[in-house]
Image 1: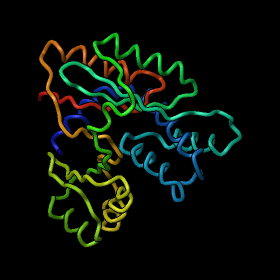
Image 2: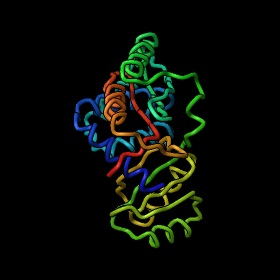
Image 3: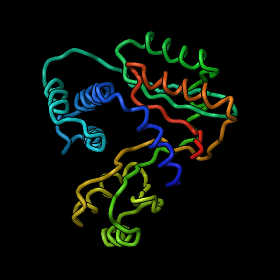
Image 4: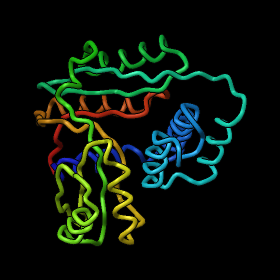
Length: 239
C-alpha cells in the first residue's frame, strides 16, 4: 500500500504547483470545517484534520487565520459537501469531493469534465465501495522499528505500516488519526510529511499509453474546478 500512496502523492504534488489555487481551496475547506462546530481544533475534530493536512502543504498561517476568523463572523454563506463518482477508461474509477454554494453549477462542471475526457459519471456508491477511507500519516527520518515501538507502547491500533523511501507510512482507521499523531508527538515527532484522511483504492489498474493522456487530462480538469476539493482514483502510474 505504501508504494501506492507515494505514486498518488507524487502525481498529486505535480498538479498542485499552482499554490494559489491550493491555498484558496484550503481556505474554503477550513472555513466550512470551522462553521460545522466550534472554530477551535481542540473541540472540532473535522477542523483539526483539515489543519493538519494544511500544514503538510505549507499553507500560510495568514490564510488559515483568515478562514477561521471568517467562520467566527456573521457570514451567511452556506456550502454543501458533495461526492461524485465516475469512471474512466480500462476500469479506472474516480471519486470527486466538492464544496459548493451552487449544486447545479458543480454538477454540470463535474459531469462535463468526465464526458469531455472519455469518462462518465456514475450513481452514488458505484465507485466508493472499491475505496477505503484511511488515515495516512508519514514520518521522516525514523525507522519502521522505531515508529512501531512508539505506537505499540502507546497502545495505538494501526492497520498497516511500511517504509517508503525516506518515510515510514502509517495507515489506520480514520478514528485513529488523532491517537496516532498524539503518540508520535509525545515521542518527540512534531512534523509529518503526510497527515490526512484519504480514500485509498482497494485495487489499482494501469492504463495503455493511449488511455493515459486523456485520463490525466480528466483528472487535471477535475482538480482545477473551483468547487472541487479532492480527487481520488485507482490508476497506477508507471515510474
